[in-house]
Image (tube, helix red, strand yellow):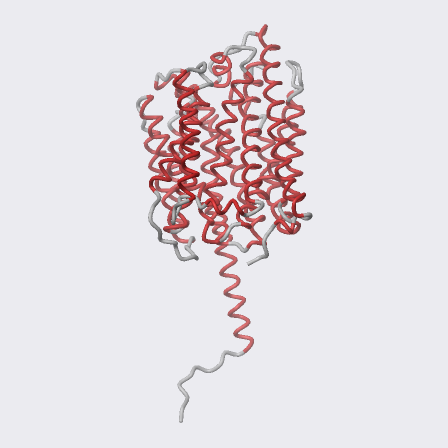
Length: 501
């Protein structure tokens, strides 16, 4: 009788098959990192390149100085308000699918921004672009967490930081060239071919490895969270260009009240927009709050240093931005190494030490004078890049290591929300504190690069900047303490992390 069973595969063939499968998985992981890096790179380019283009947009579209900043803030607000919600959508309908949707919406928003003909259209299209950015940034961490085991996620997030820093550098260099020799519209057109290439690569490479958790949408939760964040952040950003009024106070109080109602309502939901039980994980809250306070302290540095270089030192926006390039370059190089260290010894030490290095950089900035060498400014930027390059990959990986796999999208969105809340508030605090010695309008115009500071006011602006840098040091110190408490509570970095799955 002839057996119909296939012959047993020789041991050597099985070993070759396993090696081939491992090689295929490794190749797919590398391509996944490339796809996510492209998304992060595009977002970073958009951050620095738009700052340089603001004066040209103001002239071309006849936008008032008080409103042109919404070209930046509107985008960041949209990402901040929607990050948690679209991260949850990734958990429900597939992270890879939502990430690819982000590329599509971002490309469409970019093309529309390049075609904008008025103040209303450029701000409105930037909001659409921000929707695409929310899908990208909120789901990028979940896509990496799906692709890599827990013991390799620090390295993956370290490579991700390369994309951010290269994007920031490209934004400065391309922004200067395009605005000088072409048109500000090209800063958006360049996103179209890049985004379409990234979308095609994502469609070919990314796979949703976990079954989607199909649940009803929590529309009321989305509305309460979005309204609350918008109210608080709108009020804070309005304070940068106008004094406190009853309307601004109403937005602030109403936003805070909406967030309070959101917390109460979500506790009773069967399928909440944000599962608040995640905060029972002991190290999650300090990790997210460390991201918030680091963003609150660090994002202000971009505005404050540009105000110093353009206002006190009379540099052009492009030349001022070029002095920050060494910091971005070093941050990109150091990120993967610090990510690997966090994989070996845990995330707490790299993250906490990185925050300490950033405090040292802020200390140097707080001593700037009208005659300070520009080499010192560049050196402080390098130190700040080292600190950020150590903190961000480790802290991001820590979040994705401690949450359950079914909540990767929500956790990634929460991380982006906390960091972006810090970024938006950072801008408001920077302008408010720095402008205590000169008018807010003049401080704002100096940041935009649309006016020069009278030399007699150089010392006054420097004094205001010192106060803002000291405020950033205080926020960074809070982030450092929050990061360190994870070790103090558990006695070792590894004890604060769950066993590897």
